[in-house]
Amino acid sequence: MIEFRNLRKEFVLRGQRKLVIDDLSLSVPSKTSVALLGRNGAGKSTLLKMIAGTMDATSGEILSSGTISWPVGFAGSFHPDLTGSQNAKFVARIYGVDTEALAEFVEDFAELGPSFHMPLRSYSSGMRSRLSFGVSMGIPFDTYLVDEVTSVGDAAFKKKSGALFHERMRDSGSFVVSHSMPQIRELCDVGIVLEHGRAVYYDDLEAAIEHHLHNMAA
Image (cartoon, rainbow, N blue to C red; front, top):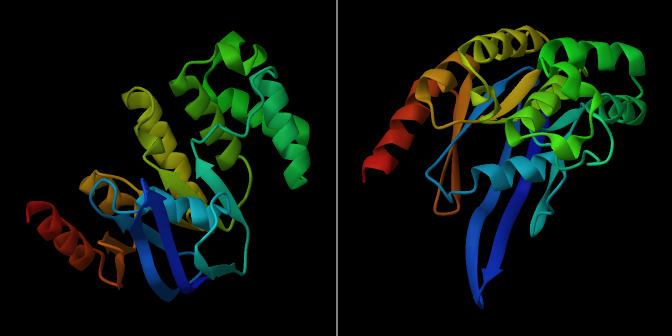
């Protein structure tokens, strides 16, 4: 379960305050996949980063009864001078999983070929995302954070990524940011719509999508 208690996030930009999340309080059950919906700048990625613990809230707190992944596809914590293999093994040590098993899984899944054994600084953004997605999916988390990552790669890789994600969701939950409503319908159970600092939770995913599309059309 993940619980938000009076969560608030605001930024100060050029002397002016921008409220992104205003007093969010709700509980999300375990093994639930949540769509984070909202227009650009509504705070979807900001909320995702706060759930991951990579960004602090202005006030309030987020409590979790299980483990949470970093945003899937985010490779910012990888070391540029280490190879893909070395980065995977480093992460494995941090999370206490088998280093060789994770490296083998990622090498097979990410389809990086010889580049898997080359320094990360030589990778394109897409290659970094493939590596990060593979490392994330290779570790059993209770909640996965997904920010448009399954759009990486060609059609075959997207299909492969989607199949792996569905497999993980049998025993885990997720928070998903995507502008694709077909993808949201495929991956999510419930929705949170963000607009002007307000977050509205819907047990009915279709109601959340309808609210979001209404906001986009306004």
